[in-house]
Length: 280
Ligand code: IPD
Ligand code: CA
Ligand code: CA
Image (cartoon, rainbow, N blue to C red; front, side):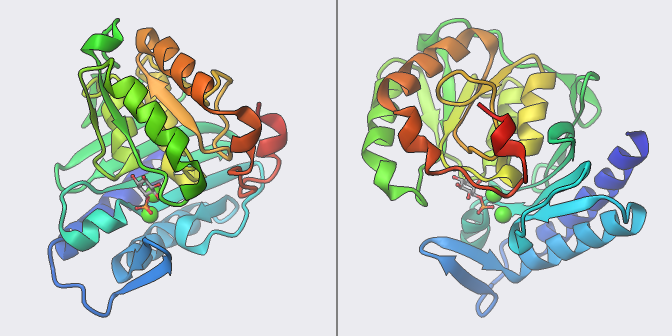
């Protein structure tokens, strides 16, 4: 795994430099709307090309699932890549963006890297070996009570049919915690849970590249990751709760009281072949 994490580190740092160079620049003509409020820029594409070429030349036998060319991925080993997380922030010059690379082996995340190019923070985890930020060990927070917790979330703008329940969950937690942040880059939200800056995070309808690396970071930092119903998380389902161990029960209790398991199944995808069958 060492040679794989080294190659992923080279790729993510180069992609981060490329993104940082374009951040804050005028992007006219470089932005396309893939779907309502879902954008791709020339920088997303350039970052993805750089990462995939770097990884493919080092490990031609490993499959690739990358956001902008999202064809279902399969195989014993699979890279899962978000070349620029927080594209809407990037377009607006709002400084919350990241890059994410994970390696799945038989559908289990073994390596996770997230890079924040603006803060120059590199989060890395190798299964069983802990989580690190710029080579310093990180751990989830020790916050035990929801009333003292700072939470992160994202709005389900691609699943507007679920907005009322989501807002109900938001209100339920908001009235009982210290605060809720929505910074617009799920890969950073998860990294901030891993480093104890956030006590918990919840979002629905995320994609495998949004959560694969970050979920390993949280687990390796001593946190818990599950779906909204407390079941072992499945990256193809996309509804996720990641938090310090003592906050987790509060979040699952609220999400499972408000959401219906069968209704959320419609938001699953089949991008990682076989994963959904093994999941909860
Ligand atoms: C988005 C970000 C955002 C989350 C969205 C994602 P993108 O990723 O992670 O925080 O709320 O659901 O799609 O499209 O900027 O890579
Ligand atoms: Ca993303
Ligand atoms: Ca992206």
